[in-house]
Image 1 (cartoon, rainbow, N blue to C red):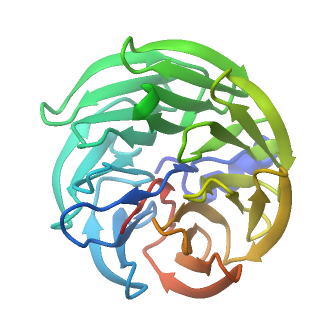
Image 2 (cartoon, rainbow, N blue to C red; image 1 turned 90 degrees about the horizontal axis):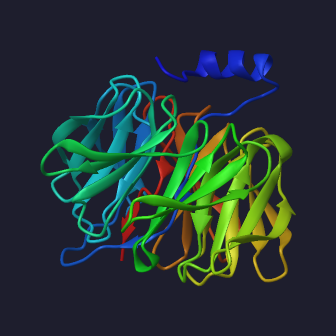
Length: 330
């Protein structure tokens, strides 16, 4: 299995605590029907736990490919995309019916994933081949591949600016891709081992979570330069910005916590305890609740953002990752 718990322990020892799989991401609003779900990829049980946001409880398990990790939702709330590293494909799932539609073969090491407004295109980061695959979902084929830095992981699509942002972990860079020309526009140096990415709703601030130097790099997307470097907890992994753009929430894997960053002051203003080895993180559309996947405890911690307190934990499958945007809510 690619990047299992045992392999993570080995790689940490061999490479001075190198982390794999995180994300990023933005909150999405459901359309038409009232569907309020969190989709949690479970890498060790080859499935996806569906959590009802209103009830704050697991309601269904969807079988996926092997070792599901990355996750993305179309903005219309119709499709869910999941990377399956060990079967080298992606699962396309009906986010309303909660059933798998298809599996599409991609490159050797699919990790991060993003999709467009209607789920017709998927962008997949290939960890081993150092490329982004552009997948025509309905045709079930790769249309084009773009060379990026080494070991691309987290990716975020900003359709309003026709940009795709890619964290290249082994290059300590972020690639900015023009989705119209499908060319790399710029490459920005960030901290050590960037993995997860987050973007404010207005698209003006991009955040790179730098695993090995316990920091977050803030990038001004207008001029594509580093605006600040912010210290967080130990072994940070993923991040998400609040819908109003005031706060950034960062999971700290080795501290079992979430750092709360005031974006305006660029300061850490709170630390919230969660369960074991938090990885993926996302926020509801109204900004009231954070959902944090905990790899080590096979659970999701739910946090009230008003009080800054963890209110409950929901059991999931084994090895929960949820690397990407995984919440659909109104």
